[in-house]
Image 1 (cartoon, rainbow, N blue to C red):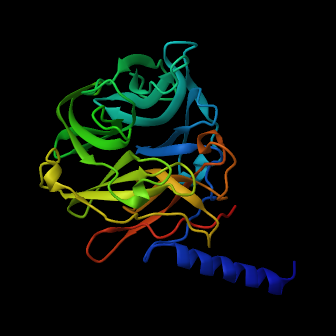
Image 2 (cartoon, one colour):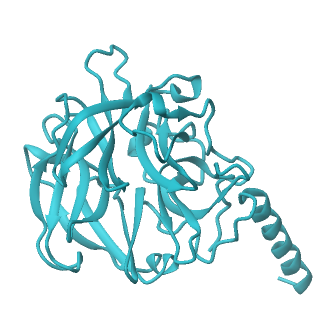
Amino acid sequence: MSAANLTRRQLLTTALLATALPAGAQPTSWPNPLVPQRADPQILRRGDWVYLMATVPEYDRLELRRARSIAGLATADPKVIWRRHEQGPMSHHVWAPELHFIDNRWFIYFSAGEAKEPWKIRLWVLENASPDPMQGDWTERGQIRTQWETFTLDATVFEHRGRRYMAWAQTDPAKKNHSTDIFISSMKSPTELQGPQVRLSQPDYAWEKVRHFVNEAPAALIHGGRVFMTYSAAGTGAEYCLGLLWADENADLLDAKNWRKSPGPVFTSSPENGIYGPGHNSFVTEPDGSVLNVFHARNYRDIVGDPLKDTGRATRVQPLAFTADGMPDFGLPLPEKR
């Protein structure tokens, strides 16, 4: 390639990045995608390390990888720390693991079904007392019990003002449309909820009801005097997108009336950048205080068959900016680069 052509390509790439990035955000220094064929990603920063967990395409195990930087996660070797059971609980559809450090111990929350009942999906937790989560033994601590024995998935845990909360998605047995809604509860311990269990969001808008009636995968971010909670909506194809809830940081988070909901999605497919179905995100804060949006998406729109069986979802990370009034500005999913 000639120098002139290379320059034109660099200028085009810079222009695409400027268009896709939220105002004030800086271009990334890591590859996009960060890790191929890994969905439902969560990155946790603890000390000098960052850890990545995500759903593997076989839905059969939990992997953990770590590095000194976000960029380092792209080449970090994954360690298999747990495999599904052959039968019974936790034997099928192992999804959406999240790593958390609570009370000087490590916990992993994940969703799993059963080999004979694949959609009997519930929340489960593992515990590790080792200072290093890549070492030690991961002990099964059982099911996180919610108010109903129904389809339950995508738990996340966060702390605010000295109180620990869990948010998750679940089907209300009283509903005939089998939707999944977002719920929140405080936690009695890292393995047990204490009431009340409050519904924060359900599929209200047309964009939340494409293919399926879905609100799932909550992720919390406390920033600028507000508690934000993203969630993913609709089916898992190109229609997948992020919605946003928020409450004042001084509000009672267990009172649904204190939460507001965006009437439109805040992060959607970008045909111009070739990225489709962005969702199931998490947030991680860099040492300089900047916030990163961690999510999965595909680099193609059309899927043959069930999107859940398509392995093209990849882990992606990009900067998150904020508007003048403190609201998160997600921009567009960035075009791919290596």
